[in-house]
Amino acid sequence: MPMKVIQSKADLAVNGAPPAFDQPLHVGRPNIGNREAFLERVGWILDNHWLTNDGPVVREFERRIAGYLGVKHCVAMCNGTIALEIAIRALGFAGEVIVPSWTFVATAHALYWQGITPVFADIDPATHNLDPAAVRRMITPRTTGIIGVHLWGLAAPVEELQAIADEHGLKLMYDAAHAFGSTCKGQTIGQFGKCEVFSFHATKAFNTMEGGAVTTNDDELAETMRLIRNFGFKGYDNVIHPGTNGKMIEVCAAMGLANLDAFDDIVATNTRNYSAYCQAMAGISGVRLLSYDQGERNSHHYVVLEVDEDCPASRDEIVAALQAENILARKYFWPGAHRMQPYRDLYPHAGLMLTNTRKIADRVVVLPNGTALPDGAVETIGSVIACLVSK
Ligand code: T4K
Image (cartoon, rainbow, N blue to C red):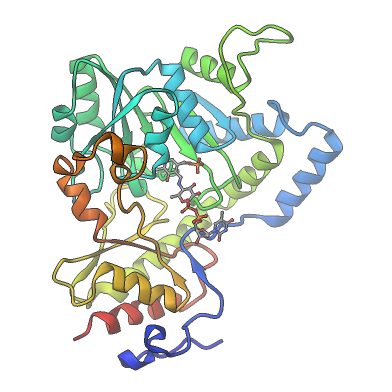
């Protein structure tokens, strides 16, 4: 279908015109790599009669991911949230752990679920990542660790956070759910802190349908996480550690291998789309895209638009107008974890310490990207936003 031409506000679906797209455009539309390679491997898995429990495809996947990220160990998991929980448990976090509120709620839930109190620190509005000075302010005698998040695949301030952790005897790990393929000062994310946790959920740039992994250079930590991932079993009938079921299945690993082979192409498509978005938004006053450091690698999976306070259209008006066009933009991660339960009841006044988080939460719109985005869609999305904010 030819793209709708938007010349005036009367052409917008919120004002009664037909939507720009027949089919919804999703922010998290999965990238599907080499379909034939995937299906062939699934056939092999069925013939092999080994579907889960540390099977040969999961092992190959772990080797390939560790090699790709340049890290000693990759422990594949059933999803990113369980991977966070297992890493937190293996590191022995307790008491309070400092995290950003400006993240997907799973970062905080993975702590709370284990009886550990997440303490929210504010972010740097330029990068949306933890502000080291804010982290220092939240340290108490009960603090045992810090979880940095590389939000949108932009590296957290790893040197500053490591210095704080060393100074105060805290353990530091990362939620790298968004950061597969990103670098920090040229070094691949996956090797910072004690360990880093990836999500390979369907909606991520690199996916295994459901899945995740913890990467680390620490042999002992990797071994402990492998035990916890499989109920604490060391061989048959011998349980030597408390554990859970965090195992990745063979079919998910097969999807991961097919997508790993396609990952460079996926990133190239995302990067092309991101550049088109930059061009489309360049002349529109009142909105701007979060920028990526051109000297670092990033999957450019997240296209994050910030709507200024004095923009003629509010953030919520922009989201409503895009959704009316079947462009399912998202307000990730509004309203911030501190305003979600149980944290809203736990910290009714947290917003006083989280001034940047509050501001950013009210400004952000995440736009669709990925290999499923139709040609020309970015330009149409740009023209919807341009028309909306025009006076
Ligand atoms: N830490 C961080 C920083 C994270 O962002 C995440 C996950 C985690 C930890 C936890 O990792 P996992 O345990 O999830 O591995 C989605 C994802 O479910 C979640 O994985 C992700 N972050 C988060 C940012 O986004 P929702 O609740 O927004 O998902 P939903 O169902 O609204 O889907 C998003 C869009 O994608 C929709 O427009 C529908 C579309 N979609 C979705 C799926 C699953 C498709 O088109 N096809 C699909 O197969 O959380």
